[in-house]
Image: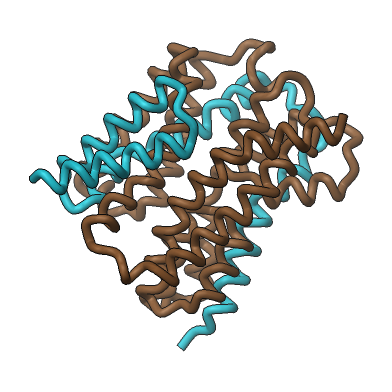
Amino acid sequence: MHNIYLYILIMAAATYIIRMLPFTLFRKEIKNITFRSFLYYVPYVTLAVMTFPSILNATSSIWSGLAGFIVAIILAYHGGNLFKVSIGACIVVFLIEWII
Amino acid sequence: MQIDWFKKGLKDGIPIATGYLAVSFTLGIAAKKVGMSTFQATLMSFLNLTSAGEFAAIGLIGTGASYLEMAITQFIINIRYFLMSCALSQKLEKNLPFFHRLFLAFGITDEIFGLSVSVSGKLNPYYTYGMMTLAIPGWAFGTCLGVITGNTLSPRILSAFSVALYGMFLAVIVPPARKNKILAGIVIISMFMSGLFSKLPIIKNMSSGFQIIILTILIAGAAAVLFPIQEDDTLK
């Protein structure tokens, strides 16, 4: 049986080191424009990849997941903040699953 | 100056904290299922601030995975934070004291990074601290609530809550993509490729963490070569 606290400490250390190294290592400005561009694009690609198609399989029906996905995009497109977009998607999933 | 930035951070931290509350609530429910106590789950969220990482960790704890597997999984899923920190390190004053760097590193999440990196000019760390001041307790408190109330909710409500995480991701990527056509194209291609990867033989059997890394390096790399950013873009 593994110790849950040890699990938590290990994951905390791993996630912190990942975030901390660049702040302490790369203290000089990165001049290479390709590398800077790569860094600029990374978060968008990662989050897009993590969202789709996972969102379709997150709920109990693929159709409610799809509806949540579309509504979240519409809300975000019209400038909804984090809370509105998240909760809006949840409400739509709830309604769709209530109907079908 | 510092207090103004801190206040602005608090203000921008409100929607982040409420969004986190909804997502970390589902995290608490999942944590309870694998037998974690309220304190353990809350501590995990307080120390980690990583949605995908924590969901994966809960799965690993449930199956009794090795400590090494836990470390490697966290490393892979959260490698994007390494890249985000690289990007944000470029926005810091060169002579910013070391302790600021250590504190800032703790709060690099997708959302806090997204707002921190988009301020014009250099980043005042107090702006990020303002967001962290609300977002971190929101994340931990939501997890706590999820453990306590999770099994009193109907399966239908739980199913609805499970999209909160993705709604949060979309809230980060869609607004900038609306203003920048290249970014919009990259987001669409990323989703398409990710859908493709989930269907292709052999590739679909790879862990999702590896798929994310491969797609990120491929697509962001190609975008960097094809569409290098202008100097006045975000990284300035």
